[in-house]
Image (cartoon, rainbow, N blue to C red):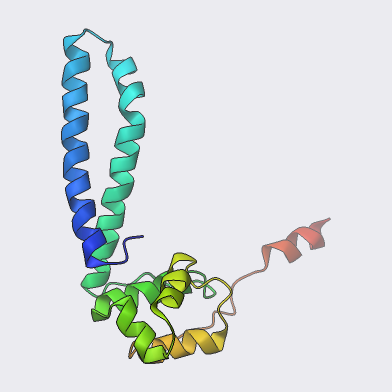
Length: 152
């Protein structure tokens, strides 16, 4: 996940470079009369990497516009906290200052996607970001594991 404007700019340049590299390799291999299926096989890892990076760029651009991913049972709360920080234009250093912790702690938390963070910690980060998460409980969801046990 791209977490800073600097990472975003580097990723945009990297995609452009990878696209040129792929096109160059494709042209070179065609010149050497390599069959298309072998060219595709050779370039597939490069293309996959480039597509993944493009997805990360698109995700970063969406969160900058305020389009956030939805949560299911709080899964993804860590990514949402990072996305909110980015959207608000708050650096890791600024967030650390607001929370009274070291910047390295925020960096670690974000790298780990806030795994293991307490509800209190998540609430503190949300407050420091000037945001809140509003949840909705859906009681119509069936527990698939209990259905399997009932039919056994």
